[in-house]
Every structure is written in C-alpha cells, then in structure tokens.
Image (cartoon, rainbow, N blue to C red; front, side):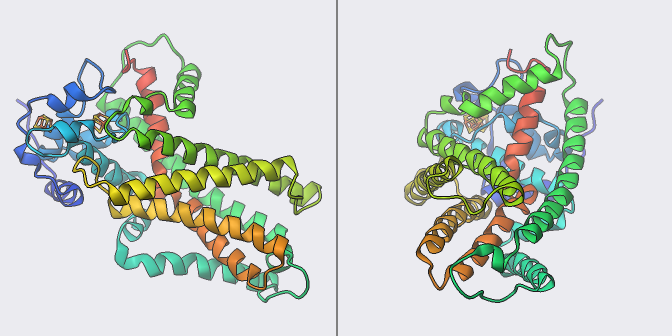
Length: 365
Ligand code: SF4
Ligand code: SF4
C-alpha cells in the first residue's frame, strides 16, 4: 500500500502563484499529447499535474521533466479545463529556486515586490562601502575615467569575492538537485558518459534546438536566443576586460575587437529584451502568464543593457553625470549577477543540469 503525504503549503503556494485550480485537472492527457518536447514514456506535464494537486513536493523537486519544459504555452492553450499546465510547471520551477538556493531567505525577499527597495538598497550599500574603503567615493575631476571612481583592482577583487561566495552556494544546490533526481528518476544503463551528455546538452542550449519546437509563442525562441547570445558575449567581453585592466591598456578603443563584440552584445540584448517586454505587455492570451519573477528578471536585464550603453556613451562624450550612471550600472550588475541563484536567472543552471541528466538517463529516447 502506498501512503500519500501531501504538502498543503506547497499546493497553496503553486495555486496562488499560477492562479490555477489544480484539482479540476481531469487527467485527460491532452497537455502531454500536444507537447512537442514530451517523451513517449512517462510524458509530462500530465503526471506533474496530478503530483502538484496531491502536493507531492519532494517528487516534483527531483523531477528533471520540470526543466525539459520551455513554457511555450501549447499545453495551456489546449487544456479543456483551463488548468494552465504550462504555468503550473513554471510555478514549480520558481518554487525550486527557494528549495535549492542557499540562503533561501534571499529567494523570498527577491520574489516579493514589497521588498524591492531592500533589494536595491543592499548592493547600493555594499558598493558604496567598498568605494569608501578604497577612498574614491567622490566625483573625480577632469575627463571621465571610471577607474578613478572605482579602481579596477578593487572592482575586480570585490566582485570576484562575491561571485565566489554565491558559486559555493550554487554548487551545493546543484549537488542536492542531482541527488534528488537520482532518487526520483533513477536511470537505466547508459551508452553515454557524463562528458558526452554535457556536450549534447550544451549544443542543444547553444542553438536552442528544443526551444525552437514550441509553436504557440514562437517569438520567445528568437528573443531568448538573442538575449542568451548577448549575455554569453558579454561574459566573454567582461573576462577580457578584467585581463586588460591587469595586463593591457584599459579602457579599450571604440574599434577594438572586444569592444565591437561588447557593442554587438548590447544590441542583441536590447532587441531581445524589447521583444520580450513588448510581447508580454501585449499578449492577452491565457497561455502565457507573466509573474513578478518574470518581470524582475526581464526588467533588470533591460536596465542593465541600457545603463551599459549609457556608461559607454557618457565616457566618450565626457558627460557630467557619467559617474552617477556608472554607479547605477554597477548596482544593476550586482542585481543581475549576485542575485542570479535566487531569481529566474537560475533557470539556466537547473535547466542545464536537468538536460544533462535527461541525456544520461535516456529520457529523450
Ligand atoms: S492539465 Fe488539462 S490537458 Fe492536462 S491532463 Fe489536466 S485537464 Fe487534461
Ligand atoms: S508549456 Fe510547452 S513545453 Fe511546457 S509542457 Fe506545455 S507544451 Fe510542453
């Protein structure tokens, strides 16, 4: 005999987040039938719908299938009971950030609009404190030179320190997620080893092969691809910029290849974010919800891009407000990068891990 131990708080949280009456799902399976990404064996999202309505939180937390969904909305658009299975999976993913990210209090603060001022104040205080200690917390005279305002050595070391701290928390979360998946969905014997599986998943992610299959909101694939590649290019540029501050001349000239890549990245991000924002504001369809965590992530990225563009223009044009804009940009960098494990940005971590696990366990076969 199997006993079910429902987590009532979990059911309440999911119902509230996605505004869905889980218990009205009649298990017809239309959602799984219409999903182009769902495998033939144990298809999703039908089974997840029953698990969610029964409050089987632990089962869902270790379910890699939650991350094989790209929230295209196809299933939500066709569900005869209006239960929004695509949104339910998205809410479960949001729940997983607080379940795996440490310390979990950050996820709660970042997921609640009433704490937005605290969310902004925290990096403002930390960055101001670092600059005060460095003795540069004032507007420098002469041509704009951001290193006089926040010396490169201080910037590199302090930001790397915090990145290292959050990386340790992320590694802990990944280990727990992996062990939950193994417990929940033990795989059969594999032809592939872990490295091969990682490379297959990586190729899929780089080209968005599976995302491309979604039909109802196809624009999301193109917009996401632009933002994804824009961000990857920015990471590469940041890495070279750090090296340049140590070994070469910095700042780079406008026509330096790294600068050109950085400007291209800004264009990709700008277009991608604008498409996403426009569509989310204008789509009246019931098949794609927009929650606070969606908007927080999207708007932070958008303002990070805009402020980055203004930082560059302000330097070339010697604007008097250049240092103020630069400070705002640093705060936004913090919000996007340091808060990443606690916001929707963490989806890239868990989805990658789940896709590797899916390859390893033959889930796509
Ligand atoms: S979520 Fe909708 S489509 Fe899916 S099984 Fe339930 S009622 Fe059917
Ligand atoms: S939202 Fe799209 S990808 Fe996700 S389960 Fe529904 S149909 Fe499949």
